Length: 196
Image (cartoon, rainbow, N blue to C red; front, top):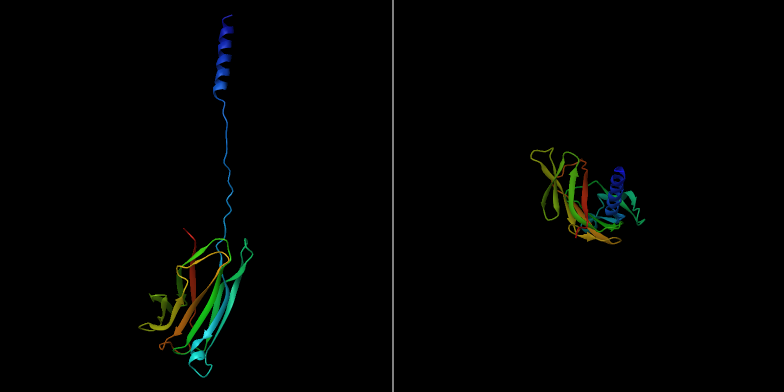
């Protein structure tokens, strides 16, 4: 008899506890698809300015071509990641003017931040102001400036998706450039995603 009230109290307290602990959940779900930042070369032109403007004979030559084709997965637009130029038979004061067209192949705006120049030893580059770099051959003591590289446009420019921009690079071979030498260098153009 004594156990019946105790069992009833336990059952009632369990029911009350269950009643007090009713609960519910709601959820927020999200899917985020990122875009692509993809800038590519789509056109170019090499101009041998010393020959075209001043000299009567075609002494040196410059050839250009595009390399490393790239197609953006979101837009299916195609461009190239590398622009090559090859100068043969250069001489002191020879001047090459290369124009190129870049297109934003992706879905995100890009901002051109900087240039980095590297050369095959013994060629080293030094920034000298504006958009100009000196290429010094360190195999000589003291090192000789053998070429200058100058950029026109780009730095600070924002390129929106599907848009194109034209830019230029000039290469000037200096009087101190030695005969029968070969110099190789690479120009990297730094691009960041647009950050408002």
